[in-house]
Length: 420
Ligand code: LLP
Image (cartoon, rainbow, N blue to C red):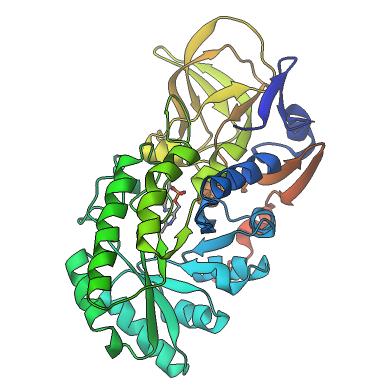
């Protein structure tokens, strides 16, 4: 499942000792296993080989250029959500015909650069956006492809912050409104409305919500067909859950077996947008224990990585397994693993039973490959971590650690203030 394993009680990433990486590159440090992420991509590809979908990796999960390059080289496309991600896609030389673009708030500038780039299509989230893309395409004298993002009103059974397919969420267009739009599609002279898109949420561990959403959309596609409205693409989004703790998520095969028959019936070309499934278990965050602090009520393990490096525990109360790089047997104790940030929400684990650690030890925060670095920040003026990709015996720096100079690079210091 992933290539972070102990040998002689030392944690390895593929054939490289993680402790050595921590010493060479410093901490906090993100470490990714190339073979794990490619394996996950190929697992999905082979589970769906019968219908040969275009797998557009969701850039937001981890947008490092080398990771994009690695996936593009396997034939993956990209799912983007901003002009910044379009820029990354371009830098990584992703063929534009493999790029799909979602987001409820695309700006005029973002829309025109994506049209100029010739992306496969926009996933459109509102009537207002549809009109705007039509207007911009007209100005550019182009006809651009779009898919309507449907809000299927399905409960994804995941954290409410990452559930996107309920009618109360800001995403997509309800079926009745989408139908009206599609009937009027000739009105949008500069749009080729060629598909539908759904994405009901993230870290979904059972296939039932996916099946429910796809069934709704498949019925809708049939209804459109009956009215002479033919489409070309169905984009089923991402959302596949992974194991962080004791989850028992559907495998790629189970997911494929459940939905392929439904997808085949639509007769459309299928696109999918996985992020976490590919990267989640393919990365770890390595931190160093700075201090052990005893208070009357608690024991805190204070480490050098915090919520600015990995915000998932603070934001979603998400669970990440934490293990020592050097494993030793010993008694377990209940601790809070916390970072150096000046907020009580800055924790990586709470009330966690862990083998005793001491100052100077290194710990690995597991399953941090997706929504780890990409959600990191400079809060507390902390330098963002370095990232290393390991392939077999080789470790390559794919992002240098930030310097203090990077922190202030875009700031303009006004320095002619006088004393009042
Ligand atoms: N497609 C669309 C339109 C999306 O909005 C997303 C994720 C994906 C695909 C990829 O979803 P995935 O396969 O990774 O579940 N920061 C949160 C996750 C937010 C997901 C946002 N959208 C977390 O750390 O759990």
